[in-house]
Image (cartoon, rainbow, N blue to C red; front, top):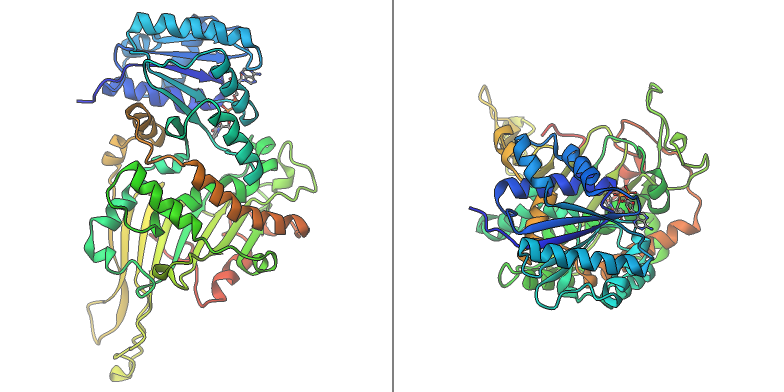
Length: 494
Ligand code: NAD
């Protein structure tokens, strides 16, 4: 049975999309599972002058699709309160503090508070500053700050943002969300690596040829063009999600599985990312922007609302990254992300070294050419593992064929799995920062990304350069071909 947590949530941006689409459904799940029961309340704040009742109505609607009977939804939303609030108005924080104190008494929330920034990033600093100056922190319980991406747009802005929040909150109180770190199969990576000696023994440059991390989306930019135009795929997906996955795959073994030990290894790993010179970027990173599809059914990025006709924003990135450690000597980590690709999939393909001593080369004049073994870790929409090995098919003669040893989570077990936000909220309630990013990691990853961005800003790309419903520009395939590699996703069927 789940351990109940006593807490007051203060959600800045409580009327917004993130709060309604992700946060409230996840809180409702925690309620149905007993992590939240009697001793909690949620204060939603935003500019609009809503009543508590109206706010509760919107929250009911946002959780309506989640299983749970109406009585349960009704009792859940009774814990919700609304406070009309302008982030820049000091008086509003005084009112907010009063409400939080009153609810703390009423619900016996043990002085614990979670401040959740579901609001535009330019307000994070202002809110943190007022939380401090208007005395909203409660010294008798825990005070935790939850921050959404983007965490800056380069090292300079990320540092300014960090300075502005860390004047109020200490690093151990800050939970920077990277929702990929809440995904089931990404959380499974350390278990896979560090509890299976058979894998750990080959997890190095002697056995691994290259590692491919793909975050492919089938959809276009949709309604997020305003934000996306100022970000692009490099900042939106590679700086955070792709590099965080890379760190979990490449870091050294932590002494124990604690937040401190894991972050120590991740920081060291990020410190050892090989930095390119500006001109090296051209050989190691590819960018793209989607065009219409071959049949003309899908529109180009430049045709989307709020996107200029001559936009130079990239919707696709493929890159080759090296890690300067003995373990990963000369092993390329390929990262790839894009919108409007042929298939939605988040996956990792670990390609092992090919057999170089082929004893079957002349066997009965048959061509037996072993292929590299591949371990595929499917993260979404499927979840599973597949080890593709050389085997044989029954029949005349001896011929090799690729055989998948695969395991896929069933639909039934997926239905019981926890959504990323749900897992991350449980971590926040329990004070576990393992699955969040810290400032040092942010600083290292921005440093790495800034060089690529700087180079790209010097050169005007020839966009659009890939059709919707493909796997991106042909240069992405050439990037791998340069070293005799090829993308596994796009050529296999798992
Ligand atoms: P949104 O525009 O839907 O909501 C913004 C909220 O902020 C609203 O409640 C609005 O009333 C409030 N707000 C705006 N100006 C205010 C002011 N001056 N004073 C007080 N409140 C004010 O935005 P969103 O999509 O919910 O995104 C919120 C945050 O989450 C952003 O940092 C965004 O980058 C991040 N994020 C969102 C998503 C998503 O799926 N929506 C995904 C990842 C990260």
